[in-house]
Image (cartoon, rainbow, N blue to C red; front, side):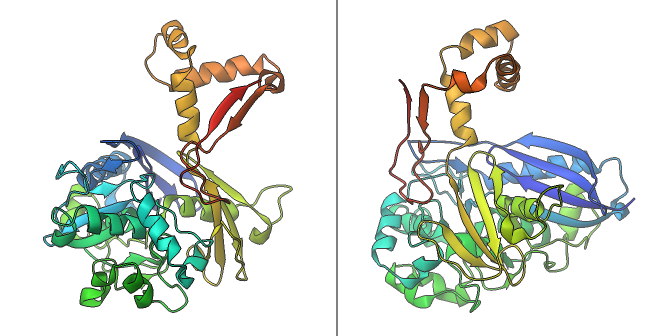
Length: 396
């Protein structure tokens, strides 16, 4: 049987799976990755730590099959910012200078002031992000690195990648970027297939234009197209794959999920993807809607052209802290400690399973009748686009 190798890098773990040509999911492997938080609103990772986890899960799921059975590789990952120096080695993005921490995690909010500065320009580029750029996007983070880590990072930088593109580069050695990442998180113009020089000059990042914008992306392809010559010889030995195994242009994790969900056929659900709203749930929740025509909605990211499918637009809303908020509420609840003792566990998973069993014996609507939650603990992503908003839990 032939397989496609799928790799998904989430916020705190890497997953790999073998999928048949008919969509049947085979072996799955998971490996954790580290997150550092040196101060409030700062979240950092290591590209080397992530890559080693990728290698592990790929070897785990492919060990029982012949490399000839792997016909292609697809990767998705969080929209985190990876910094490399001129020799393509990890370049610190940490205020404390740790050299291995070269990834600004997607949920990092260090660049709130930079996002405000960019929004105050009122540039037309902002029309494609709902009118306001988010500090979770890469452009404000790049500006933060330039102004705050000028010597330790900016002046030494060679390449900046969105994490999905970093992974395809590691696999192939090819610097081609994904239209999905560049349009959704870097303000790339999908219609004109270029960077907006006036915008970058206005926000103080025109130096990225050097070498035909190589640092942030010169060659750009649509999701689903192939990159370079496939898996490189060096990486093929690390992963146990054949050299030149085709590698697809990467996608952001939520957008890959939207592609799968919005294309799914289910009883009672209209087949037209324009009638659907996909909710991609993880650490955050992304609300994804696709359309054949260009629609602008204040506070909603997009319309993003061809970032998932050709000749279509994507609108994206969501909540910055969703699964993470649920985890926080359970982990900090006074009853959690006693439940862990009762279950003889230190992990959160068994606690969640226990709570699900408890709620089945109760009238769940009555349990929450007097409990009210405003969920924007990590700012409001949409429709208010306010990173400074905070949440609350109140019981009346």
